[in-house]
Image 1: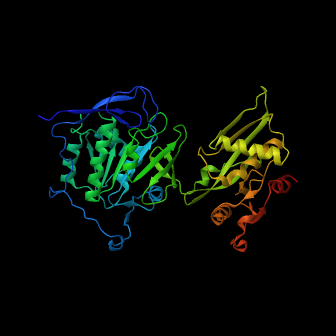
Image 2: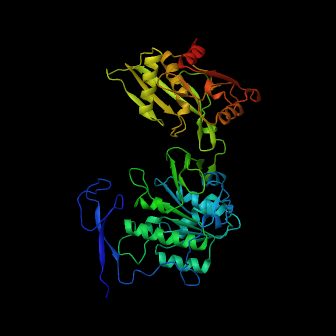
Image 3: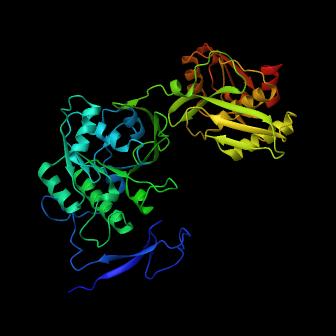
Length: 458
């Protein structure tokens, strides 16, 4: 009888140790090591094997001898998901989707299974019963006729038996933390189980060219639960974000081997499922009956998609002596830097004022092109003078108060023109190669922050 081997794994990051440790040397967390069996008698039998039962042998090839071919993509029937994936599904790809409980991950995947055309889909659920999934399917579509099969199972061995009989073209697993393999003696959701089950599904996807979707839980810090190697193993990592108290959800690409890693898709959660939001500016720009101070519009880019977002600022006298600095959806350190530029270069006394900043729509923005929009909103609130809602901004601000150029300015200007804006402020340095005559919107070029405020406030 083979000797049983065990090791200690950090439940936070997956670090492996031969003995128990109080503090993990990798992530510095305390009391996270748990003993798990890693080798059991006959545990070296592969879980997934090809139809012939033999292993595939690979041989080295020269780079010039390898024939390049365009990757064929399959539409999921969801334009937002297709955009985030880079244009559609790639055969044999493994996609991991993470998000908070109740945010809509299962709804999104069930919609995909019901809407994709011409494909046999297997939806594997380890969390819900068939009746629960049926109720959700009826809520999403009144008469589901898709070629979609539901399997409630948590054992990977039983799942692969059903896959061999059904031969699906797309597999969805909800969720990877509920699966367990009999080759590993540990509880479902542990580091070794998650790693082993993912490896088995990855091997199946690559050998059969079947796309596999994995739904993953997240920790209290917002990271996907399980070892960090889980994100390295898969081809694409998507994050489903949003506030459960609001209807809008954002599907963000964190890693993508087959497309851009900065794309995002926007959905609206409704009673009959998730609705695609093709024009995100409709949720990021509020409809105002009157002009208000402290509100400006900035042109930003998320991946290949231009968006017009509303930046809101509130400046008031510090009531308790120590001024407060708070930003929602924007980096607080960068906001403090912009406030220092305003005080040093423009003479505005903001050191004794409370400053609150909010990006409307509940999204987080890292694009430096909204710097000028934020500074204009802060001064608008400070002076209590409104800025016209027909003006938008697209420029970065440097520490010396210079207005810096931003990339893909033509897309930002086109989006502003399409949404009916009359004027846009950009940097002088963006004029190189820009044909102003093809735009009907008035393009105002500036080089210093002082010029912007003299043009806005006189």
